Structures are given as C-alpha cells and as structure tokens.
Amino acid sequence: MRLISTRKYFVIFLILILQGVSSCFAGTETIQRSDSTRNDDFDIKNASFLLPQAKPPKKYTSAVFLLNIFTPPDWTLDAVKTPMFCYAGKYSLGSGFNIQANVATMFVSTRICLGPWWNYTSNNFHLGIGYQAAFNYGILQQFGFHTTLTGWEEQPSIAFGYSFKTMAVVLRSDMYVTNALYLHEGGYTVPFTNTFINGYSFTMSLEQRLVKNKVMSVGMKWSYLRYHILAWPAFPVNSYYYAVPEVQLGYNF
Image (tube, rainbow, N blue to C red; front, side, top):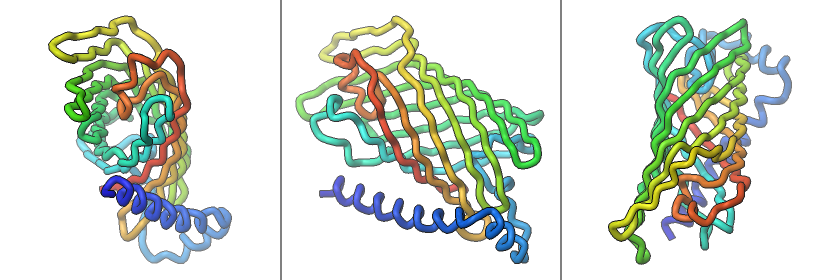
C-alpha cells in the first residue's frame, strides 16, 4: 500500500507541475510582458541548476530530484512503483569548468556519478560537455536473494540550454559505457569484465521559477539500455536493449 500511495502522490504532484508549466508556453511575448512588470531582478541564470553555464569560482549549487523510472516488464515480475531519490551538486572551478556529482538511490539500488564539466554561454544559449565516472551498487537480501552487484561505468555527456527570464529549457544526451560488473552471491563472484556500451539517453527538462529565488524543474528522459541499476537483478539475462522512459521532478536549493 505504501508503494502505491507514493506513486499516487508522485503523479498528482507531476500533474500540478505540468499545469503550471503549460501556462509558460502561452508565447514568448506573454513571458516577456510578464517579466517587464516584475519589480524584482530575478534571473533564471542565477538560480538554475540544470543550465550548463559557467559560475564564479568556489560556488556550490545543489538540487534534489525524484526519478520515476518505468522498467520493462521483461526485467521485473512487477512494475517498480517507488521513485528513486537523487541529490546532485556542482562546485565551480572557474574558467567554465566545474565538478559535478550525484547520488541516486532506492536503498536496494544506488548509482554514484562524479566528474568534470566544461561550460560555455553566449547570450541566452548555453553549452556543456562532461565526462563522469559512475559506481553502481545493488543489494538484495529479501525474497530468498542474498545478492549484491558492484560495477564501474563511464558516462560522457553533452547538454544544450536556452534561458528566458524566469525559465530555462535544457536538452541533454548521455552515453553509458560499462567497464566492469561483479555479481556476488552465496560466496561466489561472477565477473563481467568485457567493456560494452550499455546504452544512451536523451533528456528534455524545463526549469521554472517557483517562489522568490527557488526553482522547480520537470524532465522527461528516454533511455535505450541493456540494464538499469533500478532493475539490476535482471542483468545476467538481458542480452537485448530496451527502452526505459523516466519522469524527473527537481527542486533547486
């Protein structure tokens, strides 16, 4: 019941956000007119987390996300109804560079990413190129399982963004290259050490001013993968690639 309730509230929250976002696309002219009547100096560039842009040195920004991932029926007997929780942070190094890291977890499945990004801005257009290392960790001690998974991946990425006054649109693409995975069960370890391309993904996100200087984001992600950390116990039987859609809700600190 708790899993079903969690998903119900997630869907309600998503509908409310989408209703608010839909009003933002009434037209650029409407947005600009609304912005001109504001008596504050809010600019999405200063509050955005997703925009690939250079920040002053030693500046740290962060955001939290709920990731609702729809795994293929072939991977799990029952659809996973609990979203993953993700915390992400950026630390600026200056000259357009920063270090980005994020942790996405659902207790039994965890993925940690860390790596550098280079960012460039021209007026309202933004470009980012990144390369991260990812550590996957899964543990399952229920339902007769005593299994854990550990593994390493590389994740090259590219992102494009455009910023308005109070909102921003970001398009991002990622590739996932698996270097090694290890399944541990019953005192035995099964290694998968042949490097392979696990797949790729495309994400479209919209950031919108929520209140004062706080920003909310909603994103749609489509992945084409051999496995996903959320459904890692099915990895040994996955010899094909599957589409994995995902809905992301974020809040910037």
